[in-house]
Length: 164
Image (cartoon, rainbow, N blue to C red; front, side, top):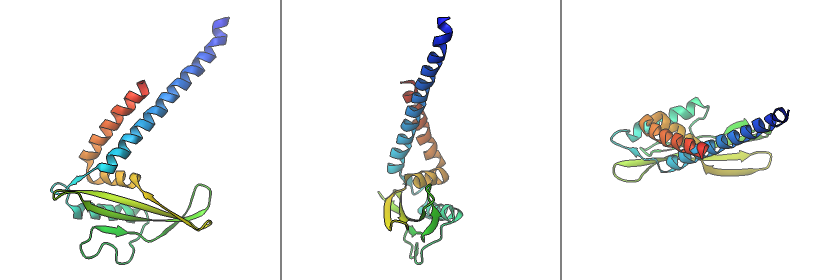
């Protein structure tokens, strides 16, 4: 009789522990991807800047962004979008725009930096932060080999966190 009363408690405790492991795994995976994205370098001989730049523009155009006038001209590998209107999770009208730069870190390597600015029209504020998600999506699209190595490390850390 006691077993049937304690069984639901055991199941609940096990579920909570498994849930905590899944949360730890997700946090560990996301941290690896974020950290690797911040320092990821493209090898210019393998992935020319022009190719990366065009992939980036095509991705943003597909998401509904448009180029700011004069952006990306004169051979400069930087690109700014116009403000794009949208509603946030609370239904408030916001606008966002992106500034993308390909930055040389050596004669043979470069990095991509994406800054996202979000303007809240209801409060009149503008917040600007580095957009790691867009950078990660670009790495996946342009450098699948590099992305696979990052993903492999992220999964290994997630598994360790889940079991630890």
